[in-house]
Length: 592
Figure (tube, rainbow, N blue to C red):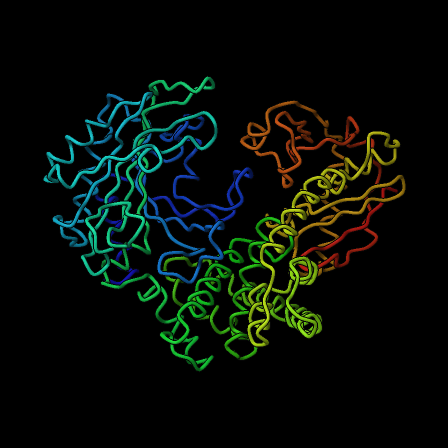
């Protein structure tokens, strides 16, 4: 079954059964406590916990979506049969289940079986189900076991597991959570380990988890105890790539139509066959696809947060292309293929095509300079012997020279890299970065002058104005303020036009003239994020933070000094806009 047909079948199935179809949210989530969207349920968290009214916003308690997702912990594992950065999650929800006929376990299980068996033709005899076996706090999910059996799954194919595999949540230390049931599919003995095994076997890939049904019926309290929720929810998710591979009879999603045209394009451009360089071609295809979707959702390459992830996967893909002696501009050709492959279902890719290609081209060009300089240093080091861990980390961190290229160069000269030393240097760098975060982003100290306090308040107006003019991808990357001027660094991949600069100046001065009140509130960091406060340096924030709101225009988490009203500021003037590094622009401005 083609992937495009499968998505449509899923959405049509649930729409016919009374579900509201919700578009995929951005890969950059509204919840700034997480880096990227990695699950279909993330956009529904306020509804699942009861903070927002699902009936008011969606007109129904039953929802379904195909969600764009991005996973970062396993980037180095990409290239095997199962790992991806970008992936899609099919999901359905029943929110606020009560006594008014909303479905819970029985409805979720029946819908899942109906879709898998009747709509896509999976063999029911190959289903193995996992359920929660219970612990000292929560009993075994006997209800789910009974329902599965009533729907034709024999007891011998229902396996019990502990909270590691079959209990979901909470996302924090407290909150909604509950047991889950997973549908695993037996792909046959040829995928097995030669032993009697079953779902969650660590030695083979015979049993593939396809659908996770989470039954949120408990709340974990601050003292660690559990109590029943007044509002229960069903939260489910299908790994789209896994299901596609099973339905198309392939060992991996990389062999399905989700990747086939992209990999064939790489073969033609690089001149190698997939079977000869499986890992390399998978990495290039996966990372190019991930980059296309990140850029489309407003991410630009930088050295922090989402921008760092984008830069990392772009440069990793380029590096593997170079190892295979691929042509210049390889990723541009592949990005066009990705856009063409996905634009029917994700039209934003077509709308953002020019920007996507522009960002990739610029990063490829910058990386060429990095490779040239890094190659010279690496060759010099290799002439002397094996590469020390700290030297490899210098190449990686200071020059952005990928470890894969260093390894390739070392291999050709029969040299080694001290990877343990590399990891030690990396950890040390992280500790130093965390320690310096507050100094780096503080902007202005406690002993600030009146003039510096005014300029600091102005950065809040400037930040919001930049986001209005250039887009929500803009985020503060740092600031420096003295009594005479402000310096504000922000994420943006190209030079601002004169018209854009004038628009920003105009917005800031308009807000100054409106004499807006600057209010300060103390609240938990998570609450501040829920209320929409901007906060891009989460590693430095304490549990309780100060939130400064300027009228209904700006809201930011901040520790600096501020004036009481915007009319105290004077006239705002941008005196310079320039580059401050790759993917980062710098504004210098004054108050006249």
